[in-house]
Length: 508
Image (cartoon, rainbow, N blue to C red; front, side, top):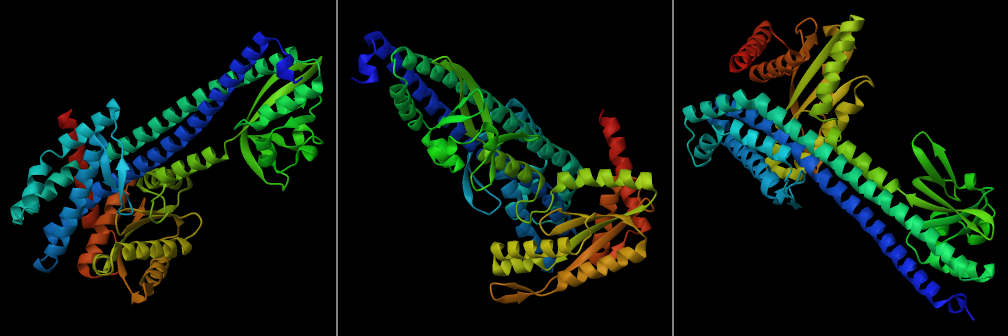
């Protein structure tokens, strides 16, 4: 006669109900894990797309400036680039409110879920209000109105709202990151309480088993079957830390047989660290885990029911999410937000140590024709190659970021004057101009570089970046490979900054 058939009828029914509840809780935990994975992937896409909006907003301003300054030969190229960037920016902004499909950073259509968060919707509404004057002018331009007045109006509107739109897109990215963290925390909390319920329920199952049997051998057999049929990693450990039993999933996770595992102590298979608990497999590798323990008595013996949850996958996804929020998806370089933070930090360090700091603003020449001739994939390959070359020829203390479509910025702290920056520029120009093989075709490009020194030429980080940008444009217009910031560029940036500040005070 088996353990269950010898048990009283009411006991068998209670045991059956408890097992069903345990299995339901087990599947609920599995569903929460899947939900966490889906939420992390969706948020990673949203953060990536929001980060691209920042880049697109700046590219619109740059293209409008190029349109305004371009001759008739390049007017068509810059017009097409403006139309493509404007439509991608507008369609993506609309998708944040309505969902549907959106073009990702690899030019593929992917499903996108609309945001219902009031703060996100408020940011989107403010962005639309900031660009309300731009929309009718852009539509006229797209429909064929290429008059100098329309182009000048586009440029003026984008320059007037450039900083506001960039700030709004940064706020959008930050809010989506915060929402992602909040959702993950809620799901983790639900997961934790579900595990607690499962543990209490499992302890109740064990008590029912003990009540319905007088033979420990039959109890262990039934308990082992129950453990092996769960989708959680479970162990039973005695008061001395000796492993008494492990289910099939646990044996698979740690790489031990049942016989080998029951010869080990608790501290041989998992241990604490500053980053939480880690499990140690038979081959010596480790993986991040969560531990939940519930004590119970069996035949006057104190035992611990231990649940081991492998969270290494979630931690990897969280690291990927953080990486996406701080790095350019194509080149792997830091993005604008991290670049601005480091620029402020390096300026502060320069003020303390009394040294100089240089900022290089690099714009690739000839990228657009290569991108149009060989396709976007070839253009991506070229950008990745140039980014790796630049990164490999910088010092460990330097910071390089992708600033726009074909623009890069480099922070060079503790530089010993123009003679050292001249050597660095010549080295960077050399590696940029080296031929690149793209699909069997060899192509070459050059670059225009603007350089600004701090504190010799600028008084703050914001002016440092704007002045280097202006110097780059002067070098490009003069046909030079690089140029240091001139007094006219510095005065122009300072006057523009003062005008913006005065306008802000008047508005207030």
